[in-house]
Length: 326
Image (cartoon, rainbow, N blue to C red):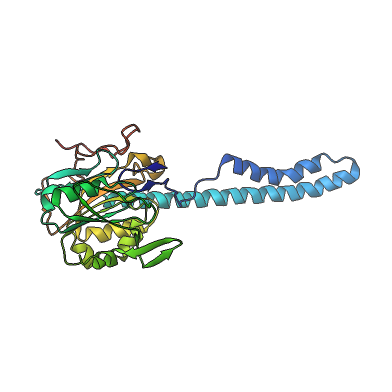
């Protein structure tokens, strides 16, 4: 849908939740049921009357069947809608950022789309950075590489562009991260663990940025807990609201990380995600080994003023939480 400066191609989210039947569908259903009855009513004479009587009885049966079909669809859709609402509420309940006493937030990358907040004072020492989903440029990666003089390993198998960074070091891989090793069509995928291992970074101090348009759920489910537990910070855009594995992944990450920042991407605002304001949301994960929670601060934490709309021209949509002081 939109070309993104820091995270590949933005695509519209397609919900798997069923929607309620439209008025047109209901009208067509009743037209099918009443059609024979109406046709029978136009017959003339004694013979036609007999046919009309038979057709009338048949038509009544069709009407009852139509009512039953519509009722079944409506009830089923309502049940699914209630289940979907419950899932979205569960996702929101997991997305509760906290305040860290020892975190100084800084924005890395673009001023709008492609920029991510991280705890600047908790990044060093750092050996390398990983940027998943880059597109034609990688402002986050360039900012990190220049500031900390480390290589940024980039992974993107859908965009053939090779981003450049004057004064920084990019190592581009034409592959994506997933839950297994192998090809999907013409695209090669490998696991997070394998990609880090092939760069000899398993025991090194890394930070990660991930924006892979919904592939994060399977990728993170496949990542070993001990691998994730060794990563100090992950800045990530997460996508979706109707897959139960979202809650599973959020809970898995929260075993080792605090959520320190939550910001919704205003390219993706939609009432269909309520009580979430949008289907894409940027989350800063800080490892519990290095973060110290401020017990006096409110939960959810006030939103940092360093957050900015991904689109500066589109209406914004955020949760109703106060903004923290600059």
